[in-house]
Image (tube, rainbow over all chains, first blue to last red; front, side):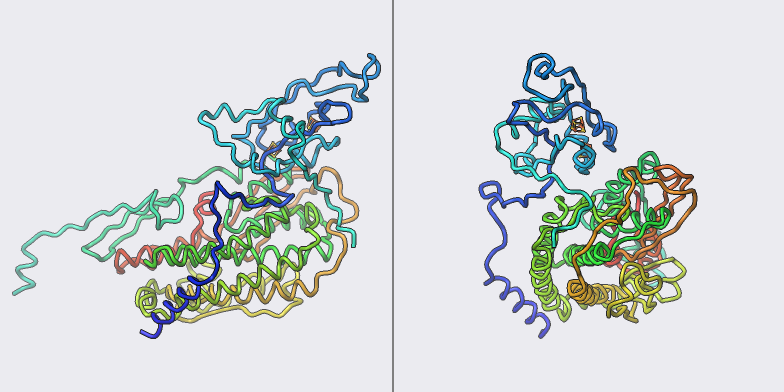
Length: 163
Length: 374
Ligand code: SF4
Ligand code: SF4
């Protein structure tokens, strides 16, 4: 009996502790900046175009082959009277979120810091009724960054913190 | 007389199917039990429902891409699984892992062991019949550990954080105080479980003397981890073949002699205390420094060769056998899963026991089906 009494006491002591749960989805837990949901494309606000040049590096490195990248000549390039230094730019971009395994490799291989993992709740709450709605196109991928709704975190690979 | 009249009736054993989708099978595991009344006469386990061909998939991918699949092999202790894999690649490629990276790795795998054992406590409590309470308690502290992992790596379960050579990126600047916070929470959690279950007469009545396996049998079945240590065999890869920095700190291999379900529970409980001790010592020894070797090639290639690396995962010896024929991907990858070997002993432990006890025995070896099936 003493053991059961002790169990009851433990339960009682937990009962009077403050709760640790939240009323999701009314209350959202703040996410850490490194949080990884799904990859997003970043928007270069100065020139008003995506950072992505369509170099295919991420597409080749993706372990589950969920990305499709098509590039084009940049119509806004300096040589044709534009303002951008990017000779090539992304034309079409699809990421199949249903296949993506959120491994972060695309972010690591991009030489232009053009892609980052979504670290907002919008990236986690992506349920849809039809699987094909999870294939995101260029416009869907850039909206968050275009609106300034995301403060992205791009990892500095293999570098130690400043002491 | 009674026996004579009883034998006039022909009795037939009943085949009872458990799973593949059953709350106490911890995943998709199916077993068919031949029962005589309440007593189990035969157990036929069926595995493979969760087979994804992860080993074969890794052979088509370079070493970095494989890490993500290792996470999914052992989703409750993904850091431990990653560690075995990256250590195998490092040994083949002859990479020297910097001090700081080794200490951080050690902290992470021990924290992951804590999270995994907490998960065991919760799920096992439910198996025994203490519905709900232990599960919620376990979830609370496990959440603290997982939140910390999310702050470090960005993901809650599939970390993809270790890399051949060290770590993908450095830990946040508030790492040490955060780990201490988590340890305080986990210590409280361990105390809660101790209070809730260890001395509880009902719990003891359900678990003591159930599913006994002797040391010799456990060795024969190739068991490892807490399941074999509860039978009195002090087998712990961290002690037998020290990797990382396990030789530089003080810790004990926890063993019990009874070999029953209760001993396996106690073993895990004490092991959690040891893990807390290990992490505390690691935090004291953690120094600033590099987290990757100086010269890392952009695409890691290994010379031809083969290697078997084993580490102590929460469920036992997690081994990775890697064959390379040069180039940037494994020629053959084989994962030695502790759960699969431990599961072999299930039949031995359950035959002759009650049906209700069979499920407790299954829970006590703490299987993760994704690791069994890969
Ligand atoms: S996101 Fe980066 S790596 Fe991928 S195509 Fe664009 S520029 Fe290249
Ligand atoms: S996170 Fe990984 S799986 Fe997802 S798109 Fe990027 S590389 Fe592919």
